[in-house]
Length: 330
Image (tube, rainbow, N blue to C red; front, side):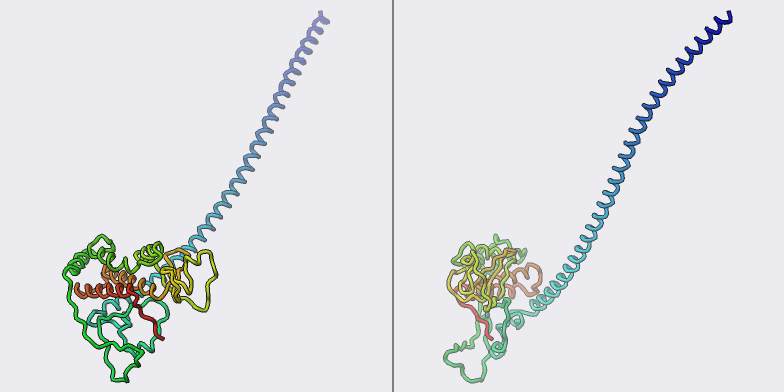
């Protein structure tokens, strides 16, 4: 009986050992799976950390780049602001000077700086104009007589006569109507007449297409006239015919000595113009300058004085259109 009991106990122990081995094997397998899962998760964590570091570095670099660009833009803006303020100061000074010239000039007592043609003959001979625009001579006043020796026969002596004038009621009525609400709109009877009778004919050149561009630039106040250094001849370009040259006017197409050239707005081309063409353009520019002064409220004269100044400027356009122009004396 005791031997059978021992056998029984031995079987129970062996069976229990087998069960424990199975459980141990199962635990080992499960532990291996857990180790693999931990290893995978660790790799994922390392990858995420690396990506996070790269993203952080990229963000810092981008932030520094944005700060640098902002600093450059701020410096550029401050520089442009300083330049703009300098230009504003210059323009304000020019406007103040123009106001002084306009406010101190009347048809009966013209400002001699605004109308240099009214200087005496001796002064004109000693004065030299370096480039820029000057108004054409006005015949609204007489030159003073001088007891000096008679002029040579080759020089024409202008007779000292007083010029009378009478207001045209139609023209004056059109001007008064325009002056109530001054603008550069050519639909008004006042400007429509001047465009038809003066501006159009004065700016009508042989090169019609270029003439239209010149008129548009004058209207937009974007035309530039500058003197040409006659010693430096331009390079020959493909557009040489279109732009004229020092000896050919781009507007009339005629062979003339061109001492000035014009630029239309921001366009890169320059157009050489003859003295006659320059006089015609300048006469129209002078007219637009004066009516802009009226529009901006810079002219403090009464209506009749303004009207006669407009008539004088209209006469300058007509004279220039007929081919008369003044040459600089020096």
